[in-house]
Length: 115
Image (tube, rainbow, N blue to C red; front, side, top):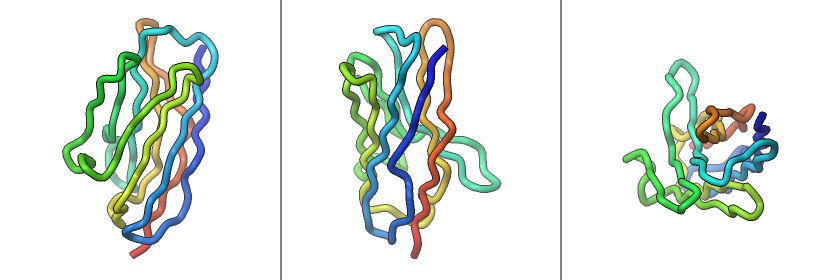
């Protein structure tokens, strides 16, 4: 099994920044993809950004230029730096890890952006 522990969410004013972290433990294969998804009230969960163990990144169009995903393979940790936050970025942000044996989710961390 894989355990994912997120941290870094909170309340921020529009235009502010937050940095989310997600630490993975357990049966982690060296080749995997870690990512962040978000789910706002009444909406479907959507991809924010993902990064492979080799460093290839993928962003949702609306996040490009504002959000940056990175990872530290030695710490099995993925980060999401969020800048220029908007009220519409308010959501629960979930960490995800995928490898050959399955897909795993964290419990989520709330991000609230006030106008």
